[in-house]
Length: 145
Image (cartoon, rainbow, N blue to C red; front, side):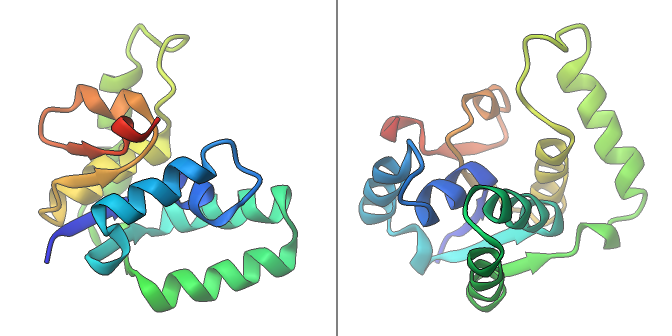
C-alpha cells in the first residue's frame, strides 16, 4: 500500500458537495483509489478541515467529519517532531521569502511538508498547485483540476 498525505483542499472538496472542486475530488478518488491506501493527515490539517467545515456547513457536519477522519486516517502528531515549530517556520520563511504576495502556501502547508519529510511520506493529494514546486513531493491532484 502507498503512504499518502491528504491536504485540506482535497478533504474539503471531497466531503462538501457544494465545493467547486467536489466533482474533481470524486473523480480523483475513483481513479487513484486514494482512500484505500495508508492515508495520513496531521493535527494542523484536522484543525483546518474542522474549522472550515464548521463555517461552511455547520457544527454537526464538523463533528461528523471529525469522527470520520479519526476513524479512517492516521493522524500524525507533528508536535512530537523535535523543534517542530522552528523547523516549520524555517520552511515557511523559504516558501514565502520575498514572494509573500505571490504564494498561497500557508504555515499549515509548511507543517505538511515537514510532517511528510519526517514521516517518509512522498505522495500528497492536494488541489494546491504551489506544492508542485517541491521536488521531493509527488503531487497527486492537479490532473483533476
